[in-house]
Image (tube, rainbow, N blue to C red):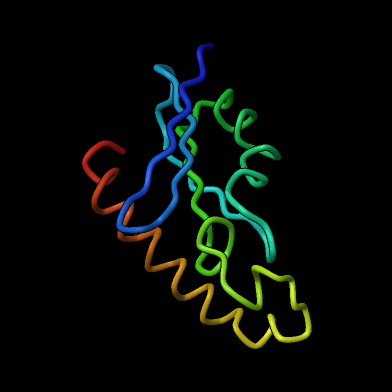
Length: 106
């Protein structure tokens, strides 16, 4: 199976996408605190692609290419105070990406 890897930015959101001609279902992969989209994809991206998924990962709000303190400098004691904001912002980003790019396809 040929893996197609695409990197692009959607409304300021860095996106990493794994696809193949055989992929019939869509799944979004998210990483943990202090992570990034590349690490998340390295862990499960190809396995999900082989299972028939079109796999999409973004950097969570304030993480990875969108890094901001306290996540960019791994200031762990302060990071927990921002987690609810990060989850809310990342959820909005995923919904926007889905609606703009994938809703008509999957």
